[in-house]
Length: 178
Image (cartoon, rainbow, N blue to C red; front, side, top):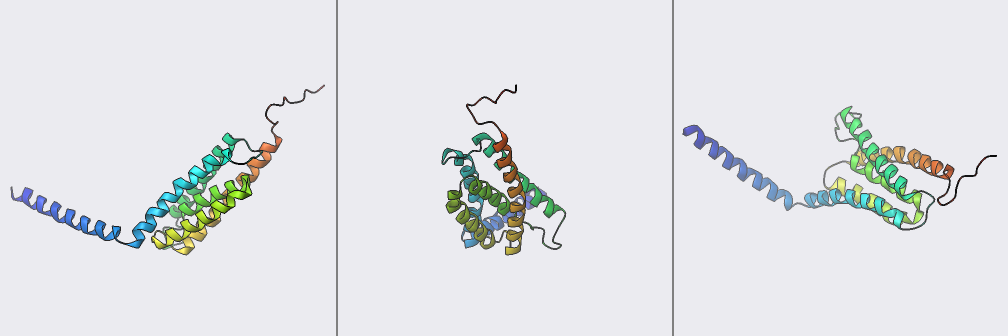
């Protein structure tokens, strides 16, 4: 009986402490910057998926979406490997996967149509500021994520563009050889 009562008291104290911590976090600016940072990733993914509907490009919509999303996931995995291998000793958050993901998508959007830069660049800048103000990362983590995103996205987008230029255009049969 005594043990059960002690357990209930301990659980109640833990619940009160968690409530106080959560209430303190909700009232802080860092909490709201963190929410914004977490919401910007689905927004950038939506832009990647919607981009083929706007503008004209020689790249097929399905391939653009698949390779773009795959590249963003690859950039995130590379940052995860960097964190696991502890590339920067003493900083287990380097490089930023959030930034690498968003930068990769931004490169694909701008590569498809330069007009997307008006949306992609401010989105990446806002994400970088939000990550630092939310205390998810420091500026060096964000810079590392930027480097990873560019290192993954530029070669993959160049490969996609090259491979699409070699494919026969839609609606035209390939020429038969002689």
